[in-house]
Image (cartoon, rainbow, N blue to C red; front, top):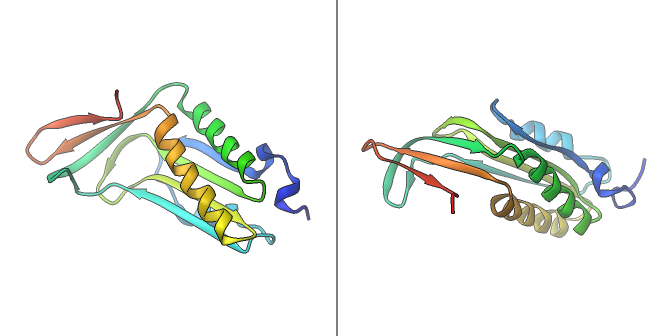
Length: 149
């Protein structure tokens, strides 16, 4: 059994994908864990029923054709910056409803501090660098795009 830190970043990235199917945080947690891991930090971005004081009914995520490649690149960069972590990350595309998981990330490491740091960095970099746009549909019939600059 190899220690996570001895494996190249590409081998410690267990999963990085876009999915039209529901995401399973339990799957992410179990797939990222290894006997060398003393900590697993999970993050689930979940569709909420409000934004900016307005009632949200549903969302739709649209991804640029390069989005999955960008997600993989970002996850590899985080793995390279944190040599003892193992990473699992997926982002939904398509129509989502309140309570659905939009983003699921799991990071395993021998120690909690590195797992927390890598998980936070990964989530922030996915939001900043992966070209995925959210269209929000409000209860009053209005809609708006988020993430398009």
